[in-house]
Length: 218
Length: 289
Image (cartoon, rainbow over all chains, first blue to last red; front, side, top):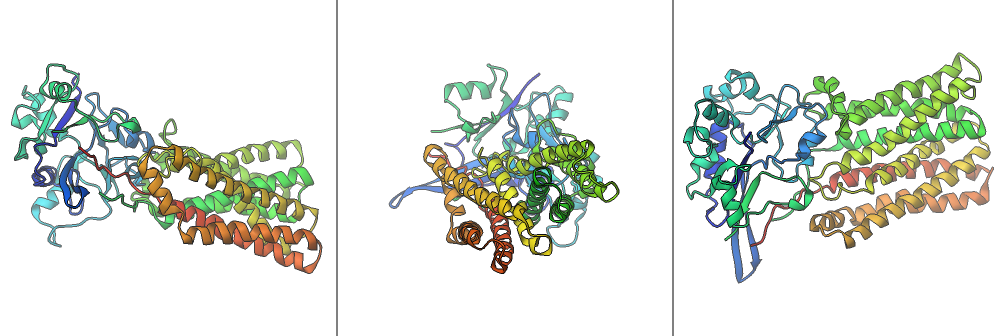
């Protein structure tokens, strides 16, 4: 079984937020909720100041704290390492929001629409999608590495991370080709080789959550 | 990139941990006084109010969650989730605690009979676990540096005991005054000193912990407001009053000073919990390269 992971090359990221928007479009994420964020910050002191960007999807941790704290077992980790929420089982206690060091969890507090009135597109995300994908008000949600795309791609015999149909939306949309997706358990995969060659690191590694998202520095 | 304060848990959680904590502490102190000095009207009332406060605390938690009808599912993940453990422990404390508190009204001497002692001991053990549980609930939140702290369970437990004993001091004038109140005052004094010691340990921990997030959270906890209300009004002043009260035992002044101490301890207990919830800050994901 593959273990899906992501590599983000911080040297290439230009902070354009295309991945953020692509994620919202692909997953029909309601207003005010972002599964993917690109943090934009400055380091250094004037006049030697540099701007940096840090894209942050869910880290799909090997030891997910969000799953450990979830009182209702609504957080589920698949064999391929993808962690997702069963909205129907979620209590909406926000414990996972506080436990996740990466702030990748967010509680969907109320039904909101971008233009006040629901558009057919938005209704789809609440009412018409497959039951496990429908947003439930009061439940927590998070990035799933676009598992619906991964699963559909695998069912069609496509190569995950290479064929567009089997690849997460943020990877496909990145204008700078800063994101890569693949099997971390396969030492020959593109992601594994990049991590090895460029000494990929993980954010807040000291907390022991074993994230599946690696970053590359210049 | 600045650290951001958590907004996920608000006043409802503060009320839950406050009422749950002092409820457990009140039951535990009442049970101990029952067993050591024999049941009194004061401890009878204490052992009834304690579990009821825990029940009200659960109500506040239920109005905080997004899908309260899924609450029965919250029992499921007791293997790893402290919230699940709390959801199991608290109803057990309420049930057994009320059984211990209310059966004496049908059966005299129940509290000191073997069955009463057994039921009360189990309930008291549950009260200890509930008192500690709130600390573990917070310390399991690895995303909040200040909370992810091994000292929190101890702090919450001692503060729960102080709050519980504070309620007994508060309501003491309504009931019989006896030697029990001096012991209670001494107990509260010890607990207040322990709270200070744990807070000092948390502060010292900043020196050995490499986490910048922890140090910054601690700075946000120890504000003038915190020092003024939690430490001075809630700890320092009650300690001084308790010392003064030793010299006026049995007088009218004594029966006035003890309830005042009780109120101040409760204010301190609430404020401490409020401050810890609101001082919780997320890690900054800033990396330098």
